[in-house]
Length: 183
Image (cartoon, rainbow, N blue to C red):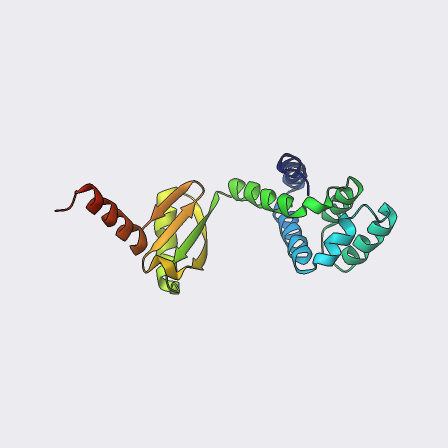
């Protein structure tokens, strides 16, 4: 696994090339698809990242996969470069940082929503509109369920946490009662 500084450097380099030729979104899609492929095929990434195999052997395996992909030539060359520099094992970090950079360029923020019960589409859409008003950015929502919240929801956008869960309210009430602040 490569460090986050190195992952950021590679992601920034590819983004810079993508901005120059106007294809940074396509390169991001290619990277995301390759990252998902690596996650789904753990043995593949173990082989191409393992230096016990020669670079030529690992390149053949990578090239066999890339030959069947619709990726742009620049993306394929980028992935080959990562393999040559023994950085391919850090592909997930590169993918994550590249996504973060493209979100910033596109004025998009991501919100992690935790609910006690499934969120209906109508409620999800209203929440997205409200968060867009709060952040002045397009908001992409990812919803997870956590029954321990009892009710309500928790919203995380970057460092901002908005906790409107019943669990948090009960804990707040409990603390108030301990301090004698009840009325």
